[in-house]
Length: 330
Image (cartoon, rainbow, N blue to C red; front, side, top):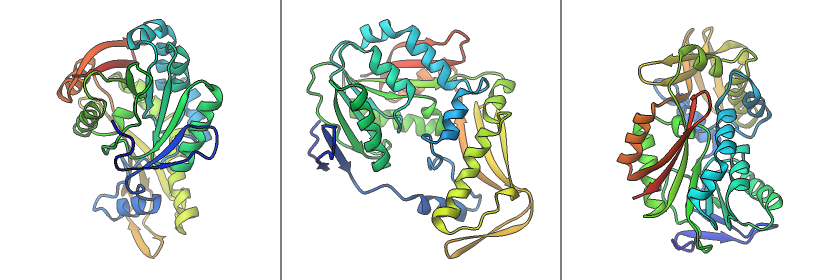
């Protein structure tokens, strides 16, 4: 793919090979947040507004109840040799996780002489900082950053190293959108990677109600803190006047569909000013703040096949709670 097409290449200020700006800047927090409140059923789910780089999220990942990152790291460590052999040497890793997390660091350390790393995120400044961290930790890598929306097609930087190109979607990022949107996202990336390209996708598996609700409604309230912080951010950045004491975080798991739904529920009738608008809340009225979809192995393989991928391998952690799927664009 030609990196010059539709791209504004910005010289790196320090330590990385290149910074690419693709398309229009993504919608700002304020626009996404207010549009969500204007909906008949208030919802900011899917807008990716909570901060995965925050200390609260890092603390959440260390809880015994929140298993996703821990299980994925276990797979990456235990299967490091097989992953490296299957992907091959001189690979170019495309990081779609929207932050440089422990899983990406583990994978980079496991691959056989990877030549290139491309970080993709919509937040330009955070993206640059992450790319510079990667360059500092892996000085021999050719590190590039692409400011773009992973849900919209854009030209990837050239794969000049001669090895495989592999896109990595860690955590349960594929589960943050409904199955139909997951199919669209994977279809897009099957086209982006083209024949011979590979994709490594983390997928959370269906499991018992007790395990799932404990992970998403943890006893320390870190999930709730992440969601409530979006209201505090609106107060800081948009001049809103949310009283966070008037909202409760509630989680519901639909076992038949594999969907975990999270809402902030108003506990009293009240009005909130956001910018120049007033939003009224009735008791029990919800702001839908997030979804997380869980899959069986068969369900996810069917989605990947429908999107244009061929299943190469999959791996499970020892407790069979989480899966990692290696796909090839066909």
